[in-house]
Length: 156
Image (tube, rainbow, N blue to C red):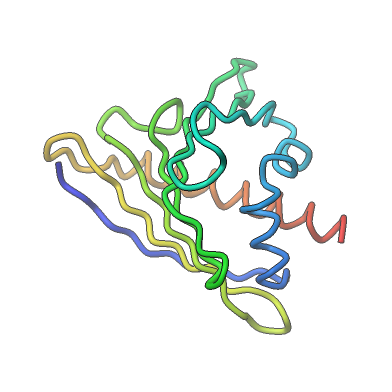
């Protein structure tokens, strides 16, 4: 298995502690309210801490219900860090064993946040990630973040 690592960074007008609470602690409640296509979040295994696997069900544009299996790898409240892996379902390409996303929030400009991401694509055998799939995944992830951010700002 090969591991391909990608780094990304974005900013948000939402303060780090508020953003962290929404994205990590309250995500199971906020995401289905903020994103119409998300239908449910259920714990399949674990107690909500590291090792927990969640099944996130959502509706695709074509009307088909799909899911993603999301495994919590680590939670670091003191440093506003969160790590999870996509381990199954529609968002996991055939060439990947899993995709791990490590996130750290810090103080940003004007009371907002800087969001640093490290994405590790764990491929099956030596398969390289498909560039188009990576771009599509990033676009969906960015759009999801912006919708949740807007929800937080509208309900603050």
